[in-house]
Image (cartoon, rainbow, N blue to C red; front, side, top):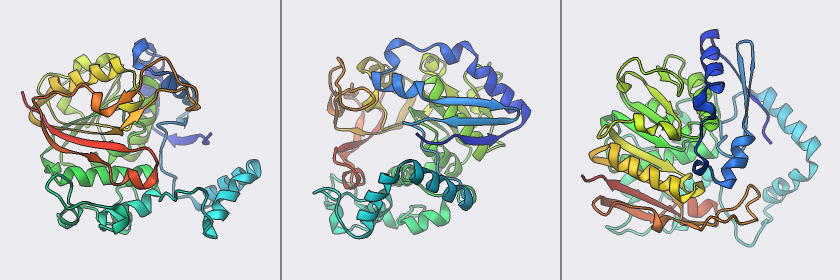
Length: 364
């Protein structure tokens, strides 16, 4: 269980957040919006207030990078080692070259360099039907290596890179190969966790409004993380009244029950990564209808999710009554133009379960 992340804000912002966590919008969640997996992980999210401070703790979806505070990091690692001395064994085995399993997986940092560098271990096929990473790496604005990423990381003065930030830059690279990020004026992210990808998009796009739809408690993670990164950003919280057009805001946070607020034909890019796979089928279907309704003609829809996931409880052992969630069975709209549909080259180097990526151009 991670420690609390502590943030200091103005009294006004803390008061706004307090009102949200006591609001009807925070409590009002449809029963079908949460799988058994997310019923558990939503419950373990904890948010506390102390004067002008906000403290957060969670597990799944809680992927905030470590702050650049060496003393605190050393203290945290020493404390963990005292509590869990056996956790040192895998680290030592890796350092001396001993494999911990028959299949040796890469970390996200090495995997990113292998794929973007077209290393043979990535097994990249040069085909009109596959992403050409040689060409992609040469495009302006592409992050072609982790070293390049460290130099251009939008929060490098405050945070260290983590696996989820590396993954966010990878997806940003893929999208940049097919569309001009500066042309995106309104983006919708569904199930964005603590907001790593949304933060990258905001820092890289010009005058882009980002709508973040997620479970009420998970939204707290993104609201706090993004407010800390971009204190001048105009944010609309779920319980707050719309005073102007949605495009007036930089970030708009909505719960699943509020997606009706998103107007038809207003979205340039819709995204879901690593969370459709955790949702009940009814919720997935509802979000696909939302995407088709609110995206403009010729807008883009990008998703990255497991090829198959058998719904389980929080320990990933005991199956639930929900039938398996399969990427190929998502309610795709046959009218849309498929631009990319392949196994994710990054994910196949870091985990055993295959992940599909798919990019569509929405047709009306």
